[in-house]
Image 1 (cartoon, chains in turn cyan, brown):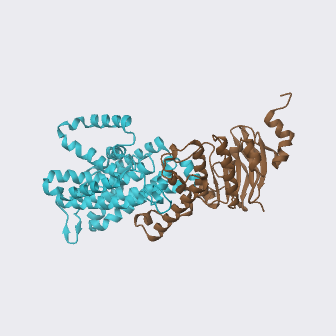
Image 2 (tube, helix red, strand yellow):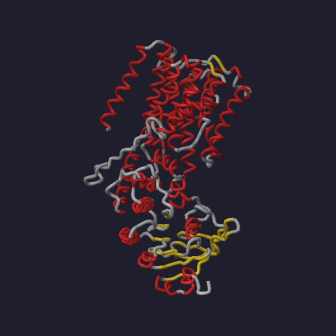
Image 3 (cartoon, helix red, strand yellow):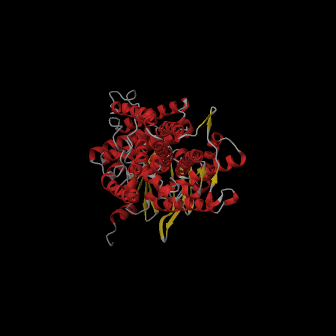
Length: 318
Length: 254
């Protein structure tokens, strides 16, 4: 099985690497959006897919990252790339503050509170909180990232920037999944009482899932801000959170390849069917319903982890 | 000094006195049975020891350390682990991963170590894997490590819970109806397994309704009825105790 998949992944990687050569600016920009949402959805996947926490406020962390970048860049002219980790850290700190009091909530209760968080953030931004966010107009004049003297400006350049970031994210999150940390999140999703009874500090791990997810969403916010050069509260609405939530559930909770496929389907497909844009909600709804009936685990559910058992068990067939 | 010392434990649910003033001690290296009719409060006592419930009053001392204010995962890391009456495995994960959950509290590497796959992290993973496989083999499930927990037979699911509990490297193991749903042959194997656990130096406290198993394997019995401890002693003494017979069979007038 593994031997079939590896060439497939390589082919996908290769296709992605040469793709911009054959596409016009518009379609490259569509793929940039797909990549950005893939990064965001992968970070949400840690919280929603792996730990099973119904978190529908991910756009709030994305917003904190984007506004951190925008404010610090336009006010103090700090280079965008320096602000990449800064945006992540601020979003993570924000996550600690808001997630800590609600970490014990389950299922639908958590869902409602996280919706509240993303709405509070959006309304705070519109109301020009601390006089920093520019109100409903947002902030403009954000500079472009500069890497080794090369200014990333055109969609083709952003394409490689975003997808390289996505590749690194996949690489690190794949390792995270296949570790004590990744397993702990899955134990919590499966049975929280049994996880505690097995010696796992469930509250701690849920919080760390939020922190890492928010850190990545904050960095995605930084990329978004420098890509758009202008940001406003409407980019971080509840609807964005719903889209991310849908990508993870539709693609396959806890499955990296599923989440990436989900990003292509949810962000890319509507561009293909631009004529039916107004029927998008209908298609979403129908797709979700079909999935709930036919594929409850998503289109590409996670594969079982592989452990090097051959050396441990005589005649073992791991 | 006893390994576990329970004193004057009281727990009420609304108006119901689930555990009323229970005190007992468990000596290191023994196999102790907690028996009593349904609804006597046996599982509640377990939940009070393992931190799933907080007692209204009373004390649980483990190696002279107060447990009643500690969260469950801390109690596990101190050396008390348990199985559940209603099987609580991670159903969609493999048998091996279920046991690895037990290894968790003896490991230290966090998310950063995992992302950068440090050498300490890789060594720790390898050791955990070895321990998990060893525990699976110890309970007799070594042949099917990658089988999903939900696909195991009922008896094997009980064994898997024991393997997971053992992987936390406990000094004190609490088994809640380990023979529930097992056939005669499996119960005989379980008796051997419980003795083998004790021979590893692990003290065992168990709830069980299968009196054959209880009388065979336990050296000391505690009898609960309506939340109160009504008798305590060796199986021979308990078998003859009129209060115990009454609790189980009722009186003639009843």
